[in-house]
Length: 192
Image (cartoon, rainbow, N blue to C red; front, side):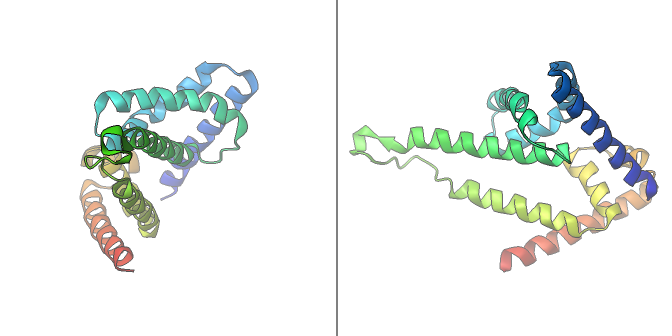
């Protein structure tokens, strides 16, 4: 169990050092190194919202450009979590912006276009993602780590085992139980 805490702690420590280096020097190499570690996750979040490869790739670059200024302004304790929130907000803002452009049709005398998909769908998705994040926190550390690596970072059982130090059979059990507990928690939250 200490191995996982140290690994996560080391990762946060490395991230903090790269942030400090970037803030002090303004050199994009440190920021690039830091962002490169999480770029695949940023792309995954973007693709989840946009459902379009090119738009997601563009967003990954735009988010990096946001980081150039925002990291100098904000005090970031956990870069990975902060970046996830920044990415999610970027995607939601982009969707809102594009929906405003598609919202009004001159042909319909300024009435909402019937083909426009309302952002309530995205608000529902946002609510579900927030609920899932909260439910992830209720899992045991072993389940949370295994589920995160397997589903969110798309590692195979062996890779999860290698990263965590858990036996492969334990990894499968943690993932199965974690998935079941997540489902129960999500269903409980949706009924409230």
